[in-house]
Image (cartoon, rainbow, N blue to C red):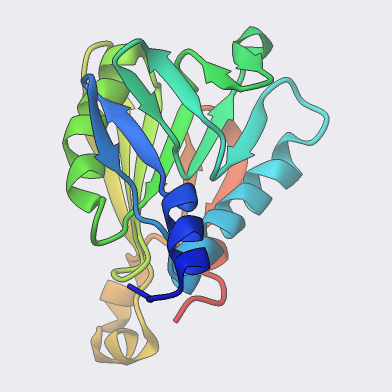
Length: 194
């Protein structure tokens, strides 16, 4: 860390924590460019679609209060119950949550937080990997998340190695369980990522 005291004070002030099962857990202090782009792309996609509708999208930085022991800051969420939206954050389960994986937080996103989200009533959960350019979608069965599908955006060099049949069978667009008429493109999610 820098010897500059102003930098150190700023770093300490910007540290972010989440509360998972009653225990404070540090979040990644600074997201990568790819992480920020993916969060922005997902937000833009849903913001454009939901404009003028009851459900509302929220990007990174909005506090989520699921219960006394679980307070998160998801990368992205959609809330369809306006009574859950308050000045200090969201109180209660969002309908959709997307976590964009970072090396320091991926383990919690894939395990502990995923279990809490399911237990608290989140209907759909996405794990988005900027490195693998993939989206895992989970849907609830009422008590836990069940893997619905995994979508991957393949680079040109991998596409060139595939047969015509393999390329024809690739799924490059998918639907969110909440909105049947929203077409989600993998290229849109990973637009401008490295």
